[in-house]
Image 1: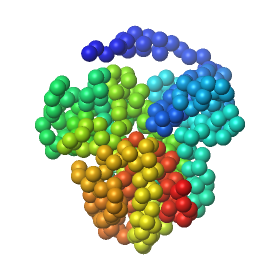
Image 2 (image 1 turned 180 degrees about the horizontal axis):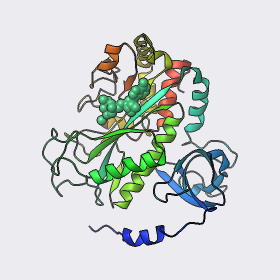
Image 3 (image 1 turned 45 degrees about the horizontal axis):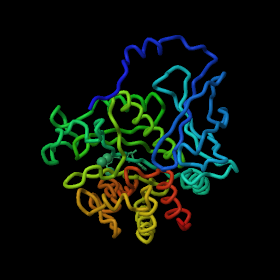
Image 4 (image 1 turned 135 degrees about the vertical axis):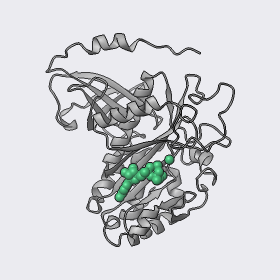
Length: 364
Ligand code: ADP
Ligand code: MN
Ligand code: MN
Ligand code: MN
């Protein structure tokens, strides 16, 4: 199968054209009706916006994104977070948006709306999050990138944090994405090759409150766009290959002010006790299909816990929630919730953690 491709050297001839100073290209980005897919469209502003609030509310045809029926299909794009555009450079912007319907009600996949309300209520506790985003690169035939066609690479073992052409596949994309994130202003914290070949991870955080979701969604957008340039597909499916291959998660590291301060371990343990009681509810929130996606991943094998039971432990990567060894030694820090699926909505995950551990509010 050949990849339809254009010549990027030719493209650069046009991207080098001087851009009128008062004209700024703003890429409006939003989550579509699947709750996983990302859509984006561009418009010119005749000023250089300094904040998302300065950017006009825009609209799109919701009937083409599973976000509206035919009639009354206009949906509103409410700007919420702004970043620099690493593709167009200059004053050009990436603009994360939340979607509202024609009556200005949040659409079903706008999980930011309630997340923001929860974060505002929990503000005094200063909730921080760091999400480890795992993902898999696919060739144009949707088979893992670099895998022998009609076959499999050797068994897992040498690939995690691997080095060498026979250990990792697609590093160019990882490197390009990292720089694109830094340039844009994403709080990217690191990256590594994962256990399954062609599987990678990047971390975003620590981020305060609502910004976790904003930064992670734009980081995902950047990954799709960078991979597009290389003719490679990114999947956030939590178990792209069945069998003896690791799945992909979105481990969510979480702390409050009290947990980070001297004696914080006690507050970490209190939070874990509250999370234990709510295990089933959290599982419903931790993937876009109410737990169905995580059923394929949280098997109790491949460094996962069983989807059916809650467990927690120091340095235990087979538990639902892990207290990192360093945190146990320091007696303060953060916890790691290992249950969220790679395709989770970070707004939903961070809202659930705050409601369960700080606000004592039910998730449903
Ligand atoms: P792992 O050992 O599980 O692979 P990583 O190094 O991939 O862990 O990711 C750890 C994540 O934890 C990073 O994204 C980092 O930003 C985040 N983190 C570190 N300290 C805190 C904290 N106090 N609160 C929340 N997140 C944190
Ligand atoms: Mn990690
Ligand atoms: Mn990982
Ligand atoms: Mn982890």
